[in-house]
Image 1 (spheres, rainbow over the protein chains, first blue to last red):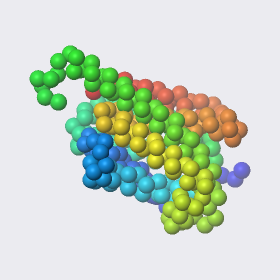
Image 2: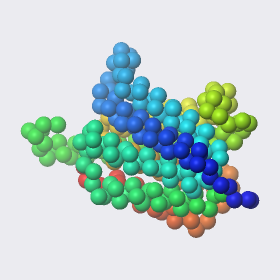
Image 3: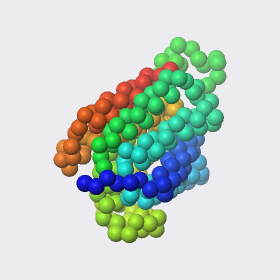
Length: 120
Length: 136
């Protein structure tokens, strides 16, 4: 197989998708905190709606971005979303931003790189 | 949670809730991996990739439709998991999806399982364990 070059446009698309997805996760968390299992409560839970919309939007970016390029480059960029999520957790939900969490997420990022390092 | 309710049973209760959240998000990763295999199959069959055809493909392409339906179910589970679990602990567990996808690709699509992949899987599993075990 010939080596595939990852176009900058693919990286930018996947980066944007990951950023939108992490914001979606924050809205899902905000909506989940107000979760009530009645039809009217679910229908008026706009935070959940924004979260789901952001998720769908990020998926479109991933599908489009992943059509060209190396997964060893693109998937770790997707995983950057976990870092953004740590930041949103700290800012919006006052969850502690600990070295342990950062270390764990860093291991995940390096792992995602290795996992896709051989798939060209 | 107010300071008055932070008695020992309350702490044990919140730990139990976090465990339940981790179990739920674990199920999410299994569904998400199945979804990704469907989406990967579908995405490679889009003739002229663009934002529009990718969006349309979610409805018109059976593999993409199945994949996104599974994503829908896993998102419902994720919301229930996030109700009681910390976002910063629950969310990174989703990285386990990559591990299941690599295993599914190996067993179903007969892709190779080299040293790099095994190192990657080990790092991701360790990372998830580190985050999951981190203090609230």
